[in-house]
Image 1 (tube, rainbow, N blue to C red):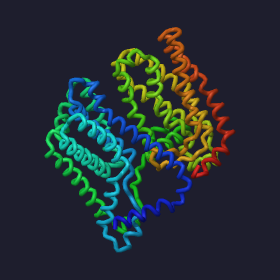
Image 2 (spheres, one colour; image 1 turned 60 degrees about the vertical axis):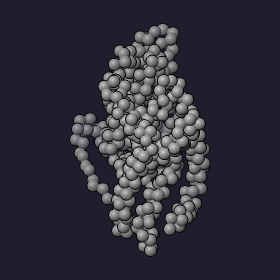
Image 3 (cartoon, helix red, strand yellow; image 1 turned 30 degrees about the vertical axis):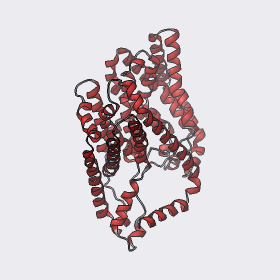
Image 4 (cartoon, helix red, strand yellow; image 1 turned 45 degrees about the vertical axis):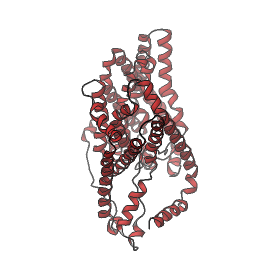
Length: 489
């Protein structure tokens, strides 16, 4: 029966109407996958020597085990976004003489050979081979590999249970950040707690039955859920959602902008791709920890400028670069109404402005690493408010590709064009170049002052800039409408 399922999936793939159109993308993704697997292969083979060099007095196997808890959490976090649930068109199968249990087993079994499961194996197998060449007991290493594969399967099936639950995402993200913070600031050593547990999978081969049992338990829970929910009635029944309404009455205080602002907020919260931009922006608040905590970057003020522009303007970049493509499904209708285009654009500017202010306040704790960091972030936030908001709105007039809001944002290139690459130069490159030149040629204070002044001047000429941007949108109006109509564009 499984052989027949595989054959049906194979024919469905090649007979798809989109096969010819997406074959180039599939080839490109294939090359990327090969590159990723090769990188993991080489990293896994070299990890023993890397750990030996970093921790010359420690056993590499022990050091890897100490950080294993982070791998489990990051793997779950990564799969939440990237891994699609294993689904198949079961409606025709339910009216055939096929057991529901066979369908459930096939769906779960197919996920066991997922590309995401290979990622971990391409890292750990070369590492294990090096261990055996270095004299580690072969039996212990091989049993440890079985344990790793069982943990990978366990993570795979646990992901199906928690996938698309925003609360779980927040919990996992908080755990990763919280555990790292506890470790880094010496409050509590998470590595000392979980290190012996994961090292036990290598030191005591009998413990291999623990991850195997966990993987089997996760499989059975998923199987029970699928077996109970696979039915003709359930398959044919349209997906229904409880409508959650909010009048967002507080937006009325913004006058004419309130209606557009309310529309944007509802769009962001009700759609996958826009909602994910909010979560991604919030997560990037922790991006500074990667650099501020490293001594090598302590005196690199230009890098700090990059971080300031990037962190305070992450939503500006992620959301702003696709204006007005977010409204592409109803942009034609909006342009046919008696809607003041200036107010429409000002509402977008207001939304981005609020995001910059919020992100700035979230970066204030980085003052722990020095007052210079706070000064740079303040100047960068002012620059984003006065200069980058008008720039990103202007470049938005060149967007002509449609975006489907209910699609996942990861691996999704909808709406992407050359504009998204060109916009990096003025938004990210220009302030860094200005800061670097003044910092090296004049002083740190001069660089901070000029960035702030540029932002203030931009804010002072805001009305003039909005007039230019509005005229640009009117000029490009019909081209944008024609582009947004093309669903495969």
